[in-house]
Image (cartoon, rainbow over all chains, first blue to last red; front, side):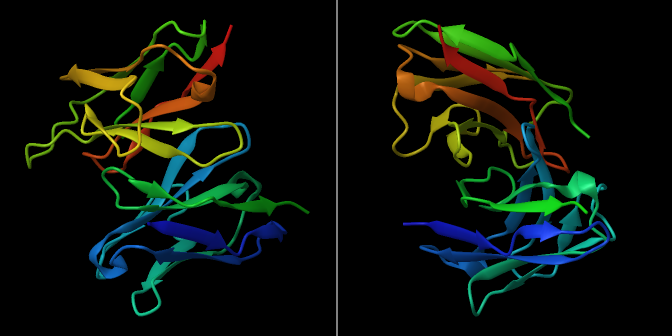
Length: 116
Length: 112
């Protein structure tokens, strides 16, 4: 059974940093691209970032480019999202999702709140 | 970016009746590999999204056959036959063909 478990969310002040993790199991992690998708309170879904299976290719939404960094540790089946220079508009539930063209599995999400 | 436009945004439905959600893409989601990466997701209240339909019309494992996807070109439809109480939630279409992946605004399905 595929499982994706996010962690690392919390309350952070504007300008601060946070590192999210996504622990994967139930599939061969190193064979798949992985993505982060976020959902602001009461809003829709917004793709944030994708990392290729090898880790060589990264993709970012314009809204986070230069501030967020996606990475992975294939030896530990874990996906990361380093978030710097956080803004109020980054407040959202962050989901990790398997694949990129079709997001076939999602985690339960972790809430990031940016507020003073 | 490819804009995905859903209608209606709110859909009250009587239990046992059918419901249809439309999704229009600003650009054809046919990929150069021949596949059409048009997907549908369900988000029940308080839950994370769950994929229902992939590549226009393929149902995911465990998805009731009351759910069906169809369409071509730039117009796609999710149909729910015989709506049940557990179908309440928000439904999103999404294209994964063109960068970046983009979602529709969501359609809220509620029981009348």
